[in-house]
Amino acid sequence: MTAPSRALRAPGGQPVEGYELAALAHDLRERFAAASRAPAAPEMRRYRLAGRPVAVRAPTGTLLDRWLWALAPWAGAAAGEPAELTVSLREADADEDPLASASSGLRALVLQGEMVTAGGLAAHAHAEGGTISLFDREAREALVLHVGRRPLPGWELAAPLRTVLHWWSESLGAQLVHAAGVGFGGRGSLLVGAGGSGKSTTALSCLAAGMDVAGDDYLWLEGEVPPVAHALYASAKVESARLAAWFPSWHPHPGGGDPGEKQVLPLAALAGARLATRLSVTSILLPRVSHVPRPRFEPVSPAAALLALAPSSLFQLPGGRPAHLRLLTRLVREVPAHRLHLSLDPLANAEAIRGHLETAATHGAR
Image 1: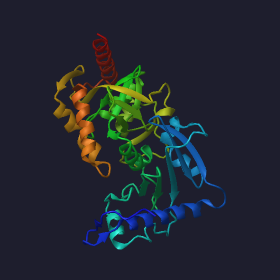
Image 2 (image 1 turned 180 degrees about the horizontal axis):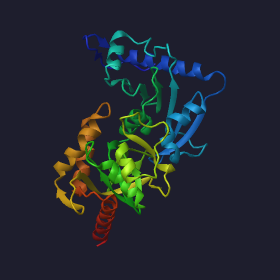
Image 3 (image 1 turned 120 degrees about the vertical axis):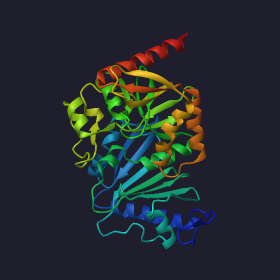
Image 4 (image 1 turned 90 degrees about the vertical axis):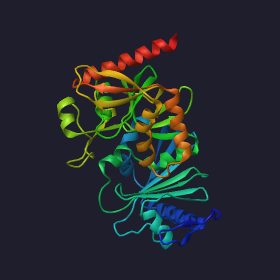
């Protein structure tokens, strides 16, 4: 059992000790073991994420197929290679209370969406996504539990294990960033911006134009020189109207968004799609739907780039820390940033980005 750490505080003020979180972790592990005893041993899948071997297990292969389709292109890590992260997935029974063993204080913290950390453990509940995640930093093991009667939403399936991968990345000095990655020849740009900025449709336009795409929503960022963005999810989210108008031959994943939500596209299934596993980041682009006759680039300051990148990268994931901001600050200082004023021609937007990257590569070679 993990040794107690300093006391945490629940909403009512009562302390939550580290051993309480360790006891909850033990209970959740036991529940997974019980669910996997019958009728057969748990199913195991291996992936290579950010260049590292990851193993994911679940009571059935059907659960893995449904939950992890967005990771499918990165499957295939060597069976004999030790996993650097092992994740256990399970769906709770309809009448099960996964937090039954937790104290009232710990239960309150987890259910209100707080990230609880103690003794190398982290726990978090995502009410909208319907998941409870737990990560053991020292053991490099994680548990993700789907709770409730509703199926996992499409946006959760588009970026599965996001919370666990976020915790794991920070334990390695890396970070998940809310951005799309596009490029060619191993070099690329990060597309960053709030919802409605045109980030996703611009990334898909690049894909349709034959460029490499490393992801639409979240990337694994390492602060090398130049910084490197690794692909995590072979998925993209796009509004139904824009999908029908700009990409009529592409079809959403059958388990994608509900009516009124963005549709989720399986990038690996799109004809001609070029998926990049990693890109050296040579620029940061801030798309803006400006309806200009031709797309154009406008240099912006590192502060403007950080303002576009940091809020969603830090606040959409639990437990944003000063170290994360330092990594992003270093990124915007090292990599030039531009606002990309988008036209209404998706192909022209993609070709403008291609030309921008070619120019940057030419200048970098001098």
